[in-house]
Length: 504
Image (cartoon, rainbow, N blue to C red; front, side):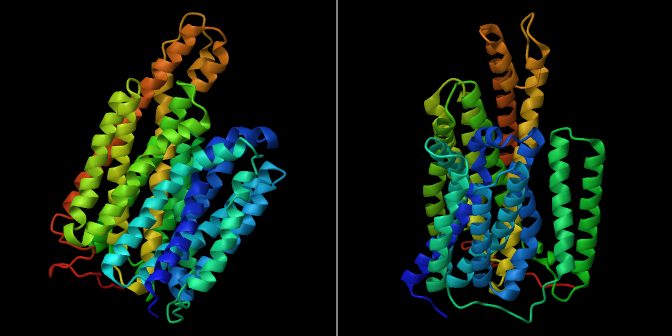
């Protein structure tokens, strides 16, 4: 069924609203957490899981839900995901205890995991013209950046007038509108009952991905060794059993042959590298300007939103020009441009606000160009019937980029601060733990505040070097993968098939 142009772009607005909700909820608690923890009386462990339950469960479920969408239909999956997300948002908003809120956040993740691959798959199915589809996917990619950047701003604004539950309640009207609009605008459900969905494969993927996420998080915060070992064993055993089962199935949950397509692989890697940089810069910059410069959560959120502003225009230009210039200059070139922006940030974060904002804008522009066409590289190199599989692979890459950034960069920042702070004589040793601790213990002692702030700035500089190096590595790797790629999103040279055949 071919939809009219007006209906296609209206449908893009609806699925983009769904994506915005998913990415907002990843970061919306950053500013709300102190208020929420105080009102609910959550322990430090409970507050950690209030944040982490959402990305951990979502990462584990994404792969299975995308391929299930190929079987039952992406329209149906999007609608189911919206309903689950709306109910979970209501439950979270009125949670009376930390345990209830953690469970509600996990339930939110189920809705997000069901809905997210369907957003990109519906675009792949609805937009049949490659140039139109590239622009539509560019808008989708830009909104992933915007949603992540808007989280702290939205929560900061809501908390000025309402209680913490409002950060979840705001989802409900958007869910209701998206449900009605999807029923009116979306094409008929594209179910393919001949496709088999293998539940054991989905459970093995869940075990492998959740085990890996927990291992990364616990290692980063020097968690208990037995838990790290158990998580690594679960991840390795689950991954091995998953890969072995896929090779034997006529309809695998993940056909590893699709990674032989270099453009597809470059798109997946670019998505991960980009989200690593966005999440890392957002995390450490909001912390630094609140703790060292005394910014409010809202003001710090607005500052890092410069990344999203820079990404929007670049994403539009990238999607519109992909058919002419090809993936190489936009993916590898975009990551290279963001490397330049990251250098500007690390050289000027404590000296010039103007150059810092310029660096954030340039970084955002590079990442926006890379992310918008990375999605096109992924979706343009599989058939429409594998849209769910491809989109879920991309979104696992998104989630892992963010998770690794938050886990590793956050702990690296604390480690460098602790190792380098030069405590003035008589200062309590507990001030080494974190800048928050030092500020709480300082009282009227300006020497301790200065020493702690200097150590934190040194840690910020170190972490920004790591972010810059990772993005530069991403530019080199994707450049090598795409060096023979021509215009458009799909591989068109005779040496490479658009979609590698499956081998079982």
